[in-house]
Length: 304
Image (cartoon, rainbow, N blue to C red; front, side):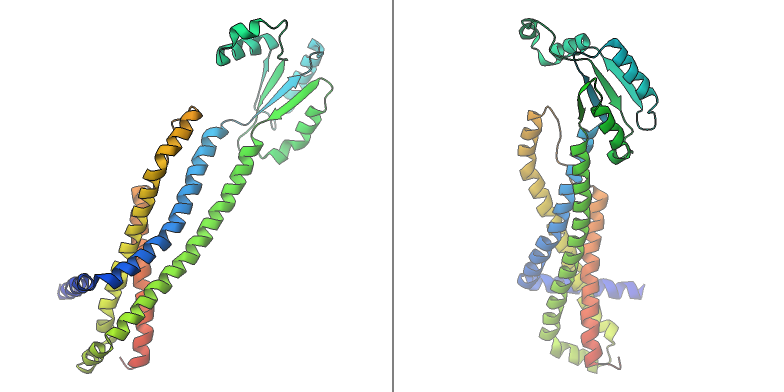
């Protein structure tokens, strides 16, 4: 109980000391907040892009447009060939040209304009559903063979750009973690430099306390709380900057989503992540303070 009371006493004394000298703490917290907000912002950017790509990706499909000259025998031949390719085709659907035209009229609202045409401009087609987990490279040869078939006019595969985007996002995720690591080291150096200045300002006080018998642990304790509080406030400021940025960007993003008939909104950090970031900021401050103060005390009072 006495141990806990001593820690509470040091904590509130440190808090009061920070309030009495707000300018140095404010400058340190601002630098930390900006530093920590950069990896958080990059993470949210990649996370939101992942959500957008997952909404657009859907079921992998390929559309096989047949030539106008393709006969019923050609259709049957291709259908039989698809039935032997179940390793990369989950489902096959044949759409007649008349059905495709009626569907296009319904979706486009151009029914009267299309009625003016003398003939149906749309061809017969096959729609192929592929497994989501199967890479395109695994059946690229089959797609090439299909595209070169004498009855096929065009093969359209719409998922390749999504897969390219996913590869870019995977690269971006690794970049985010690398940047987060570098900026985390930067945060440690910022707090470490602040602790060195604080030790220099309190050198006489530390010397007096040491001479009356205080241990290095006792001397180090208020600096640890200072670093923890600064790290915590820096992480809190970073979260506030990210939230302000999301609120500022959300309106133009919604307007852009409306143009694509989507109700997409930017997603912020879940509360569990916010708590983890606040704790990480505090621990970074505590760690930087512990290393810096311990090194200085070991040089000044190696026997303590």
